[in-house]
Image (cartoon, rainbow, N blue to C red; front, top):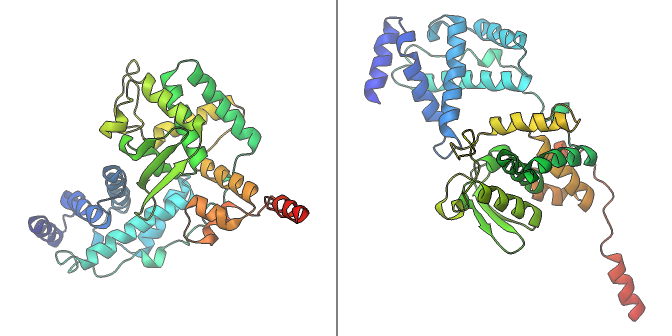
Length: 332
């Protein structure tokens, strides 16, 4: 680490920063990304790629970057058609790099300010787009039916995607929480499964899902793939099946999303996004319980304001108690 920093300092002093910029980006990404982060390697590479793209665009030494350069890059990203949330995330990465550099003894002699702060765009409102609206019951059933037929037809990828889609819909779990599951995170019970895993914020949470359909779909997939032993070995729950059905590397959420979009088009639903599974889960819980508090608990939100983004209005709470009260009154 000290040798790396010395090299950065020497090169920076001679103004030849591109030769070791990738090294500085590696050190930064590792410093600001928790070791417990899911798919850490991919995230590290993505962060480095984003910030490296900025310096390639600006073609300047880091010490010479100004807010005008950052603003020009932001407008360039907009012209490329990137969404506001994506642009905001990339600019935040760049700001993080400068903040880190200002703290590093080998770099703060040359980088004394963060030029991103004056050019930072406003944070977009979370989940306020059509892309993450909840599916209607008809849309949900149509998509599930397409995938179910592929699974029942014996298609191994169809069996995997059917179990995976049910996992998202029935549990309401987040994108990485589901795709990152391993066999050791699942315990099979007679009519349910128990899931133990890390959730957003780094906490470990256990939850029981009393749904035989989900359990049957999961067991059917792993049995067909010859991977039922994953419950004991702890291997990845979801894998690719590119070569004659043989299990390969762990499946990525991006690969599943491509399939999901194809299923949705076959169902006549149109373009969809994976996060809509969580919004659909939230809608159904809210409609069934009529309670913002219960919906918040089901989603695992720490702040009810976040839940209100998912559920704009609460349906009339179903009556589950009055009949019991009336029966006792009549017996009194």
